[in-house]
Image (cartoon, rainbow, N blue to C red; front, side, top):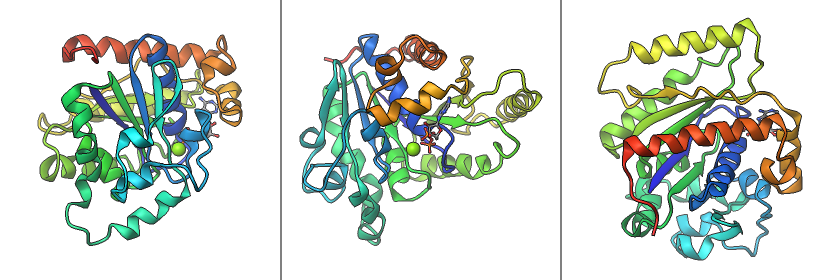
Length: 272
Ligand code: ADP
Ligand code: MG
């Protein structure tokens, strides 16, 4: 089972769009996929057609240890489910302050999925912060994907993000690796996009071998700016249901092919 945190403390860089559409594409390729929505804004849940009202069991109830992931999980398409979130999750940061072991709640909750190899992919859509929810994701997953919008400030804040992964690797999760950078909202043909990509390549190449990002790849597939990707969430549909032949669908399918191709080098067994 691959577990992937889609993480960047900046908002609006394509975390949710990528989590949802990558998950949907992998599910269409026959992988068993679960999305865990770790953002109190609940955008990933909404994008997948789930509006988590106050009565619904959500990932908040998992963090407050009143339920387990299976009780909170909902099937939204063939091979695709989501553990939804809503604004309740915003209280978690405060409620868990000072609680011993609070960094490991999600890891403990997910242990039986790992043991049983329940999914091929668990994809976590992180909130735009480096708080306790993101730390829980990082202490649980094997991989981090970083969506990046290649504009002038794109690399700013990236060092903080990388530092956080290094810290978590040292203290909480020795297996943590940043395995991919996704270039989102890409304006092809612009000089700036190419420059940012080059700078990032140089940075990754020059990093020391123990760094969690030492083997990170920049995915070849660029996710181009495409209005259909921005429209799909309000219909509660992935891009493959909303506009299956648009450039956005092509790009996320290309990305999913690259992600799936990594399975060979990771040699992981298929989900039961
Ligand atoms: P994050 O989760 O990092 O905050 P989102 O995935 O929600 O970012 O994306 C921010 C906004 O940009 C959303 O309105 C989304 O619909 C839109 N968006 C994301 N990717 C694209 C794209 N490739 N083309 C056009 N709009 C996009
Ligand atoms: Mg988001």
